[in-house]
Length: 60
Image 1 (cartoon, helix red, strand yellow):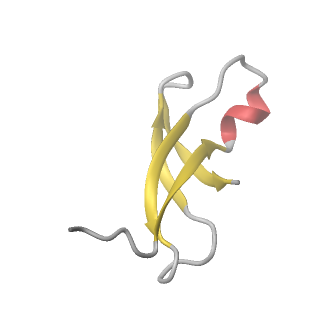
Image 2 (image 1 turned 90 degrees about the vertical axis):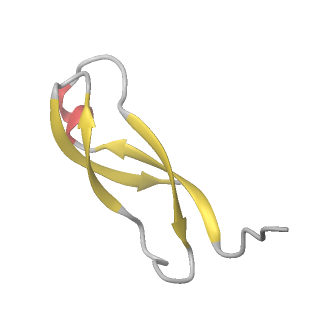
């Protein structure tokens, strides 16, 4: 039987989208290892509303 261990689901939200004032949000769900990366994750992901790759940060 597989064990999850230290892996947790996190939500990534676009940082540039909030400043534009456009309606909607760009969010992604991913997993991270809480033991190896205790700080918040920042990844470059595609934002379909802005139609470009932007920085997405982990939210609570």
